[in-house]
Image (cartoon, rainbow, N blue to C red):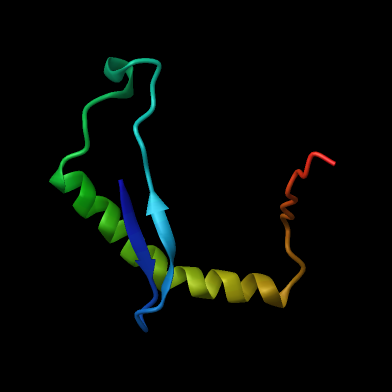
Length: 73
């Protein structure tokens, strides 16, 4: 299940996605319902409000985490 992460100026920042996983359908739990989607959309909306500030704050200081792609070279 996915929901767009949108800034207050309507710029799309990305997508918030969750999934059910398990070794079997029973282990994965129940299917998502409309209320679950509403909750995800609300979380994405809130993330859209704070994510631009978080990103701009990390650019002002030395990043604490660095991500490297593994290229298999």
